[in-house]
Length: 335
Image 1 (cartoon, rainbow, N blue to C red):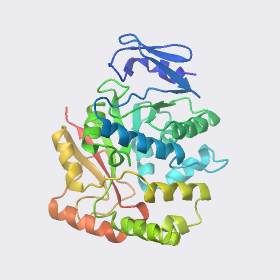
Image 2: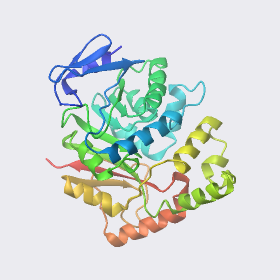
Image 3: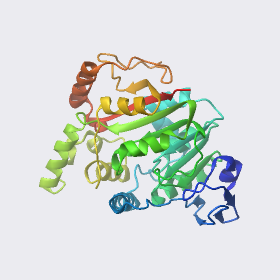
Image 4: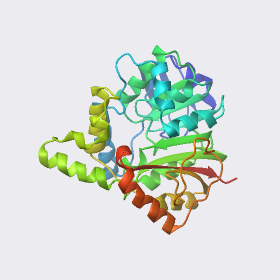
């Protein structure tokens, strides 16, 4: 049941005290503080709550309850690894990730949700660790993993502010669409950035302050109209996804209890303050720089200046509504 964790036991720590863990048959025990952690449906329950901050703990519980009720993104009925690969290959950034992430490395996805990206990348001989606070979401990923015999993928319940991994354990950490739902996005970034090895990479995805404006307007319309006029969202009027996925998308985009937005300049400042250099962005923060199918996402690109960022973000207002004003940046940890 815990084969994946045993195989990589050298990088795990207790989230409460950072002590070493002993992996038993159906439980995990800290050799330092003697806390015991259960395992449910093959998923180690290593979530440790915030301590000494009631407001932060309340927000965490609220977000956790939301995703327990509405896991995102959902799987279609009878979806298999072939369907997942085909869908990911049709998306620009997941396809580039799969083409350019080396085989046989350890990589972590923080806030993996239902584990679709983790399962997709783990299907190609990579050791993928998917971590999330929502157990119901993890169970969907675990079920898909077991159904498709993806032995190199492991799912773990974790609080990103209390990591279960040693510092500098991964050459690549991905955290897409998660930090802006937390109590302290920058604090969360600092926490997971410590898990990246020197010379390794971090991939961060956030909602953009300007690119999110169209979604904000739709949210107001849905709230006033009682969730009518859903055709205003391109993803909800399309025929390329089932009802389960549409419902999950609607809940995540328009009913989420916690959502913060950030500019490109903010995220670049996070990189600067934590020892990362900008490498790549989607959209490109350098104005008028378009995507190329052969882009090298782990090779340094120009980061642009404040005027470039303003122009790019203005363009997102006009064109980024289908993705909900989402932007992604890749940073490399300086040695």
